[in-house]
Image 1 (cartoon, rainbow, N blue to C red):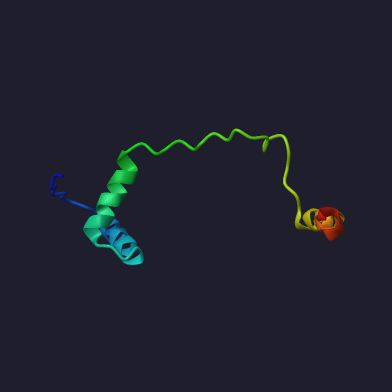
Image 2 (tube, helix red, strand yellow):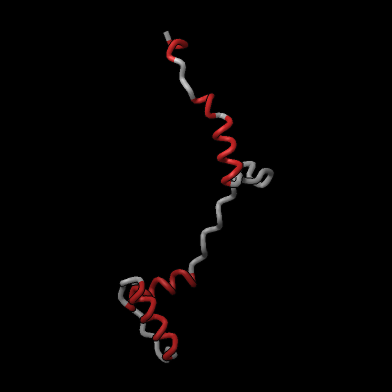
Length: 83
């Protein structure tokens, strides 16, 4: 790892770095390194979904509750069936 000296950092940038360091409970040095890494290195591309989510929607809570109520009998186990 290399050591760098950076000059002429604007006061408002230093203030924001201090706030970031305090809120993340890290040192200013670690905060600067994290900011540099996130700004310089390419971000991971979001994973492509390989499912049918674009063709179908989700259920509302009411629809989910109605479905659960409709199939509740299917979840009952009749002990006589297993003898």
